[in-house]
Image (tube, rainbow, N blue to C red; front, side, top):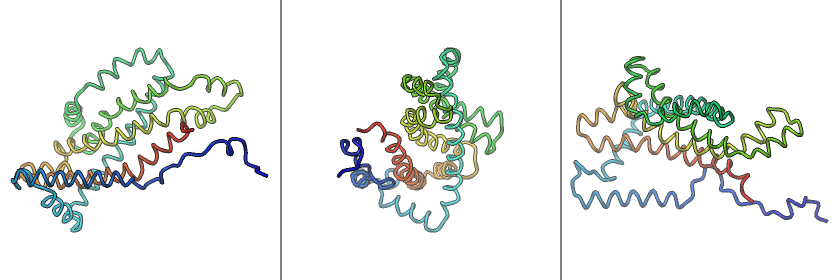
Length: 267
């Protein structure tokens, strides 16, 4: 006799990709991109201005193996992590407030629109001028550029939540913490995931600009030195080093979390 519940008998659970394992098509796609890069470089035939992977990848390998690139990678990654945590925390709280309080949203929406449209370069320069050429200014500039985008995405998620579920929770006198955990957060999880995935890509690009303009270490600083020497292979090698880290973060952390966040929506 089958003792499983009707739900277990009648619903076939979807197959979830193993977290942390990139799909083979993604790896093949990256190899195809490298092949396209090599073909274009070979067709141009100008190693100084258009170096191919045969020139750039050995520079990258040498920097990682000898350890000369690792301190700068660590410095950039540390700034990315701190700025990301600050931006996600403040942006999520602000977005939820605006989403559940329409009156506050009407007052602050113009402010948010202005913040979204201020160029990142202006924010970076002002932070350096106001705070100084230090780590505080660098991280503040990155976080300030990211907060408005997170707030907007979470505000739309809060607006799109199902009010009937909240009414049902209040009818059954569900505690506030339980409502947050079982009703609000599952509905906001896809929006949080999207904000995180978009934000991590945006933040590391802004961090490079911050380092390029006013820091004495990091990948952006090294790219600045390569720029002064007109070393295009060095620029690409340093850029690829952090691109590889971001791909690993995407495949091993963000993509599995995104699949988990959307799993409850599947049949």
